[in-house]
Length: 417
Ligand code: NIG
Ligand code: FE
Image (cartoon, rainbow, N blue to C red; front, side, top):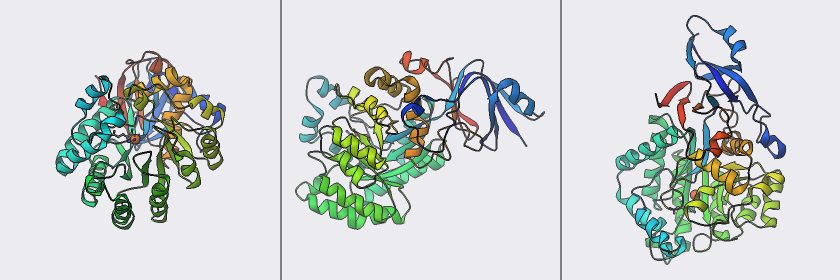
């Protein structure tokens, strides 16, 4: 059988462990193999171990790639992105630097609404071109799977257009995409004075169309003052659950809005953001085993200082996940290495905890823990070779080290040389 081997890695972070999200002290266990090698067959990990040992399995046909003392880890799994949108929000970035807040810009008709107008006006092909450009950014930063949300269409036609683009990125590029429907991201202008009407539209028309066409695996909603109330999110999540979708929720991002409790009550897979979640919210997430998805990039990029209490969540045995929240407003980054650095420096996670949160725990939050997130025999050979020797260099030398090669299903899809 034709096989590929990667040999002479300084370290391979296998993330081998129990077949479930990692909690507490388990988040410090990376399953490191020094001077490691990976054997790949049919796009899957066949063996992983010390180079000396794995070399015994080589045949004449084995194609050998020398990692040259670099670091190998599973491809990052980015469990919260808003991949598909038109244009950018460079003007608002400057406004914020001059002191106008994210909420003030939104109240004046900018923010999500601005991107919705641009995204509605764009064709599927135009959106696909931009999304493919950004997909390359993910791959070049070492990310091999993303969760991708709709939410800049806010009408039946435009939401379906975005979800089709997500499907095409998944089908036409090496980046794997897990689709989420986020119709409840903001109220569209035509429903500015009829919030009830928009919630009905989501429940009665958009959600059924999305699920009938198999275009989403999860449903998300933005539970926040000025956006969707706890009651509106409850109704939407209830319907989505009945239609077979898993649940995620933007919770307590800008204020303590009851989001964490709602996510727990609804049995959501994740509650995302959680900057303003109180003790009761954390206890509720723990009791319901909801995974917190922490997004320090949005705190950083909005120039705020209140990061979620990640350390506390780890201490409370929550299966913490880290993600970029890539979007044109609050977090314009595709870089998981940057997120790891923020998680360590601003939220005091240890580098090992950050790696677990960005790989195996993220994979479980997307119901893909059996397939990706660790380098164990049988799993997809999705991995990254970083141009450094020790995994702690990733958050430590922020802005550097860079990815040397990214592999999906055993094939490299990004390479610097
Ligand atoms: O996760 N919070 C809602 N959605 C995004 C922001 C989207 C935007 O500003 O365009 C977020 O931060
Ligand atoms: Fe988001």
